[in-house]
Amino acid sequence: GQNIDQPTEMTATEGAIVQINCTYQTSGFNGLFWYQQHAGEAPTFLSYNVLDGLEEKGRFSSFLSRSKGYSYLLLKELQMKDSASYLCAVSDSNYQLIWGAGTKLIIKP
Amino acid sequence: GAVVSQHPSWVICKSGTSVKIECRSLDFQATTMFWYRQFPKQSLMLMATSNEGSKATYEQGVEKDKFLINHASLTLSTLTVTSAHPEDSSFYICSARGDLIAGGHNEQFFGPGTRLTVL
Image 1 (cartoon, rainbow over the protein chains, first blue to last red):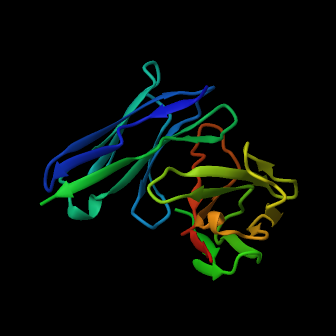
Image 2 (cartoon, rainbow over the protein chains, first blue to last red):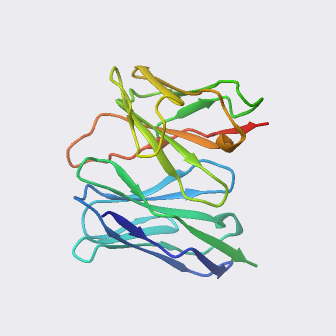
């Protein structure tokens, strides 16, 4: 079956760095996405990885290792507004997005 | 990124009535649109996938006669919840994707969601 695993909840301190991991097993692979979802709102796109390595975009970076079925989202210089759920999703062989359950990130002052 | 709108943003209706939710891609042609449902503190659940001009493909456990999907144009898809009941109360979110480009992104752009409350 297809499976996406990510931690349910993480807590970090304002100004710090946090890494959210995602492991996946899917039928085929056409890229991995990270989305941010604030409570009561729809998800917004953060990053896309299809090749191995690190993609950096401002305070956010995303890493992919296809051989390990592993990705992480790295958030630097955390701000209170980063408190949200972070969703990992993999595009399978049919370009269907398989979603993880999301990681709720709590930022403390 | 591309813009997807959804209307209405929230709706309250009586049990037994039908509710239509519209999803529009404003600045690109959406070959494929997706409808999701999300209950509080739970993950997104894909309900159905629709391609312009063809019948929607429903996920297992989703009643196609209850959740009618129409994708009549490249910019508009509608979801009609027929004979809504309190257990249908949820956050309904659509997303849209353009033509798949080899080696490129195939991300979905999300609408803002519609919060449905059935009394």
